[in-house]
Amino acid sequence: MSSEIKLTSEEFGLLSLFQTVSGVTALDCVVDEEMGRIIFVVEKEKMGLAIGKNGMVIKHVEKLVGRPVEVVEYSEDPKVFLKNCLDPRYVREVRAVDKGGGGKMLIALVDARKKGAVLGRRGKNAKRARLLLKRHFGISDVKIMST
Image (cartoon, rainbow, N blue to C red):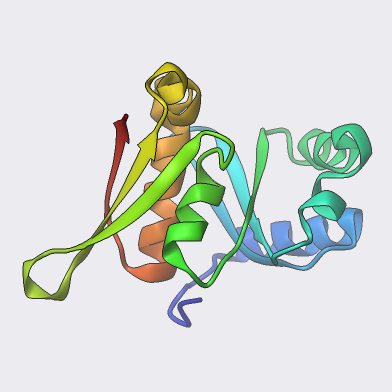
């Protein structure tokens, strides 16, 4: 994970609240004003605890903060992290492509029939993926293509 991530005092407070309610230490918190949501990034294998039985932990946090809350499982591999940011069930493959100047682009290949579900309403899942990949790996170029 990038050591250059800077958190606001609001995000620090939300991290603390999330940990208190869920018992899970989140690695990152992003307040996404554009989409009106809060995104938490949690360690691998902690998703179940973070969500809670029948989503009760998330529902409780949403009630406390008054906004939708989303949780993404972290991975040190940007390709796996991209799958986690989207919907791993529908992402068939992720390819990394080197761009000129040392940059990198990730391409997620998804089933054409599930592309809408992967992108999310108003592209919210794609925006989440781009936001988190840029923040954690410096990768801002993400394409989602149907196969």
